[in-house]
Length: 155
Image (cartoon, rainbow, N blue to C red; front, side, top):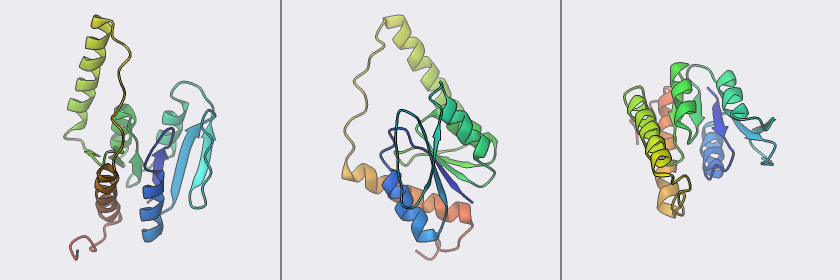
């Protein structure tokens, strides 16, 4: 098992590395040439700045049983299609049961923005400590599930 992070503007890299280190799981951070990352724990792959280049590189690398951390529903859907686990930076697990609805909601929202002419949104709210704590708990549970560990039942 490996963890792949769609690391462009990802606010949870530190948490991912902390939990991965705790369980000895290797991490690969993927970013484009517009974002320069360094890490003492993770392998960093810098991908060309083409549209969706990081997304396709990540999907090309991930395998069944790996974990993908991304906020991109399309990347999550492709990861699930390969038998990988996928997690949003909010801590929400993408699953085969919820991904179709999430993709449809994204499509409808984009369509509504185009129809109204409002293409610029405020952006996400400021990330809180509670957001980080929720992600950390959810991510650790997913790491344990993906590793097939019984440690989760013993908690």
